[in-house]
Length: 322
Image (cartoon, rainbow, N blue to C red; front, top):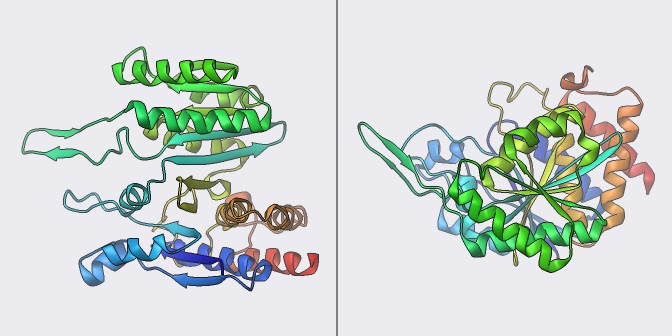
């Protein structure tokens, strides 16, 4: 039996994840869905945001549907997301951004870089170690190469090699791997790339970059399609896979029934595609497009529908498709 771990997390995760889970349940009632509670809310109750047994539970799943977690700016608080990514070795963070006339995939290295977790805070100085390894770089660029070959498209390498020696290292490995694979690639400084994808998104296909740069770049790219409420992501490793919206827990709007569930629904679609159900993924996206075309939109898209109302409309369309 296919087992799906469902993690609502914090904030609007409690609102958008139930919508996506219901969509999965309509398409696959035979799957087993089980909850795993992690996050800041869990820490407030127990003093532990993510226990070893939670990681063990996630490892029993065929895929994880993940909401969002709050990470407070406290020096003694360990990021739940970073812990899970490292524990499951989810080294490839894939963030598709598709709109009118463009279809780009940002392949972000997901386990090292500035999010290495190697930090030191003193009274007069704080240090975060940026880690870029040959092994980590090779496996993310090979994922980018695979995607470029699969899509029949070009590869762009985003970096800051004019300033950072670690990015010289990253860039050179990426270029060499692309050359060996026979894949056409270009390279661009990450700040210039952020601007250029806004001005000329149609120029870009698959973009591979380091951890923090990929995080920022995908947020920038979300502007092209209406904001973070629309962008999904997949966290892929050799054994495990986790799917989550790009947006955070948004505590300022949590509990108000105004969060956009589209990014989470699209993450559920990516989950189905990963499990081999391309048809189910298409049904979710088709339902989203049909509901939007009908004029039903959440507030961030200029409408008045709430999270539940928009979700219910999508679920009705998916049900009627069957």
